[in-house]
Image (cartoon, rainbow, N blue to C red; front, side, top):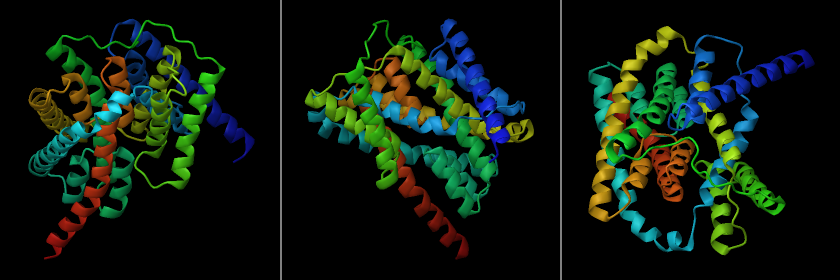
Amino acid sequence: MDRDTQMNNLSKQIFTVSVASLAGWLTSKTGMPLGWMIGAMLATAALSLFKLPMQQPAAVFHVVRASVGAMLGTAFTLELLMSVPKWTTSIAGLLVAMAVMFVLAYVALRRLAHFDRPSALLCAIPGGIAEMILLSETAGADQARVSIVHALRISLTILILPVLIGLTTGLTVSSDQTTEVFTFNVPDFLWFALCVAAGFVAKRFLNVPAPLVVAPMVVSGALHISGLSDFVVPAALSNAVQVFIGINVGGRFAGVTFRALSAVFGSAVVVVAVQISVAFAAATLAAQSMGFDILTMTLAYAPGGLAEMSLIAVAIEADPAVVGLHHVFRVLVALVAAPLLLSRFAQAKDQ
């Protein structure tokens, strides 16, 4: 890549981050829930759809995802570690909820939207967007449909879930999760950097789901449980993470035309409506029958992304560690289930 191309890409990235940051700041001032993330997401999506000179700073997203993992780990306590066995019932409930989400969404996409089998299957599974898109390349699915539906699933969940929580619980989800000012001294920064670095090591050498999030979460949790560190991520850094997560979600619409978006939008709304309804019903049942916190359960069962739902958990002071554990399980189950289902469907078609 020549120098002129590099400078052109850099200018596009600076423009994208600047617009997203401004939109996030302005949105946060309106009092909208998670304004930094939502503003950045909507602004980046608009840049993408209108074909403006935008470009995501891809290299930064690895650091951002690892930072989310480190933030999740700060919620780990010895009490939480001791209570892990009781969460097995909740995870079992999540497995049932995922199955119901998949079946209802798949049937709706097949019968109402007339999706082909592989596309309907990959769109209906509430799994990681990158993994489902990669699978669509080899499964004979409509990759554009799969990409758009999952991008809309995450975007609409981010927009709808805080409002739904507010309507059903009366709790206001704010952009700034705390008014307390935390210091971030040199030792804190070094511990935080160690957690982030653990994500890159895991990504390189370990075959685990979402390594950039899971490894920093585990290392950060170990540091906090052991008492070696009690660092807390300052609000300014948390807001910056929200902005980049918003850019990542909004940037998924790069290359998407309004025509393609409008053709799939209704299908995505059906998927999101089905999955959020099932998730909220299952979370309510789990909270009432097992004595769990309704807010934590709602986010743990929600069909959004690991990083996005974890940030919402931080914002509403739910238990981000529990939310993170559930979403890691969700991603792992989806990764295992999707290829198996595709294989079974292919066999049924051949018979």
